[in-house]
Image 1 (cartoon, rainbow, N blue to C red):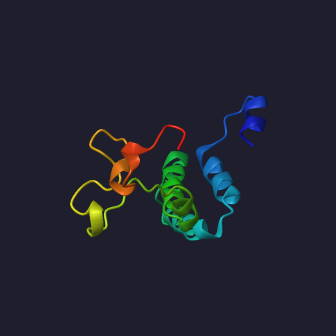
Image 2: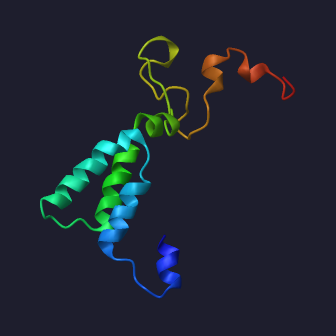
Length: 112
């Protein structure tokens, strides 16, 4: 859509960009946010394309689909067992503390 205007040498108006963005937003979890932005526009408050994009971007980052796909587990501290009171499975230098969890780690050959 933006390219059509550009090829014709016409700028796409800000409100047309916002309407286009609303039409292209398909996820059901974002429809409430789109409706809220439309209500804001209806009350006479100007909503720029950038403002709408930032609002929807924030809404996307809060969707369960997005959160589950981008979840990272950096470490685990249970507070019990041999890892109690320290940094979990990592040494202070960031290496994995295999010797805490594999009793004969130091005695294993490189092939093992």
